[in-house]
Image (cartoon, rainbow, N blue to C red; front, side, top):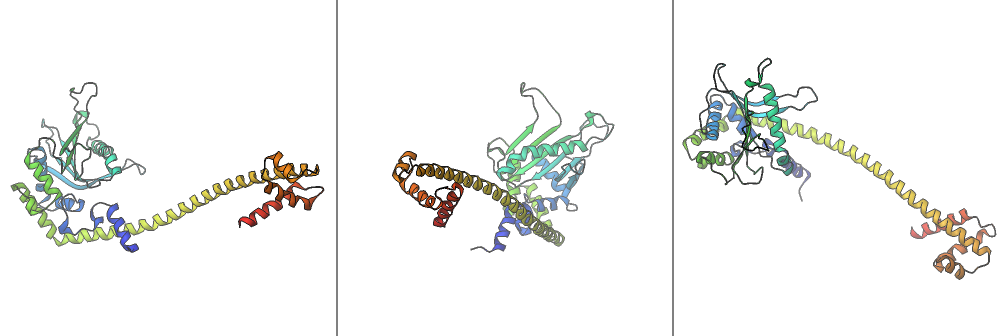
Length: 357
């Protein structure tokens, strides 16, 4: 049987992505948030790493990138939702250039529960909205709004069509072929997908990201990336950062567990009280109805006893069991000739309770 400590560890590992699983740094792959973010932010490595990724995804070089790992977009007010993007990239474009500036957001994501899959499109929609809102300076025309491309890299199939690449853009339902370019697009890259024609380099990259080993670094670009990954994994400062992150996670988890237990107990007590009241009312109504039925039966039997009818005659007329009528008549004789109905019913009820107890 597992101890409570072991059970808590299992819950922690399954409930949270990334460092919560307490992987060793050398065991991580590029779909782990910590390793991916560490490579992106590593001096003299991050920009080159991102440039190779984008070149492989889009099949072309993207120059002059500004890269920010874990960029935070706060809500418009304290009660509005914000978000943290794993890797935020923007190509530097001269003001007089014909090419439109593009913002790229790349998100490795291993949260594959049914609930997480269901909300994935809306989550991506929220990312688009937050980035677009910050990419147009005051006073500029909408024509200057930057393109936004969000890239989700997933070890699970988000839509169930077994495609390695899903490209999502807005379109007109009535005229599917009509051009509608609003500058927003999303790429869902499924590492295990087999459907669709894709460049071999992209297939190899996705395989490597899910299984980041030297054996899977099968081309020149991937060997460069693997060298970067090994550099990051061997850096003692990265290890220290990871341990601090884990310690902070443990602290917050412990606080969350304490708060959760307290709230759970309070909620449980409230539900218990509520259910207890409801059950009490239900029992009270049932008991009241039973007492009323008993008093009516006692009243009917006493009236017939006053007419000197036998137990058998009363039972037949009232369509009751002889034993029931006999029991009531036996108690009623103690209260003859007035036959106090309430007292008779009370004593019968007490006798019934004693017999059940």
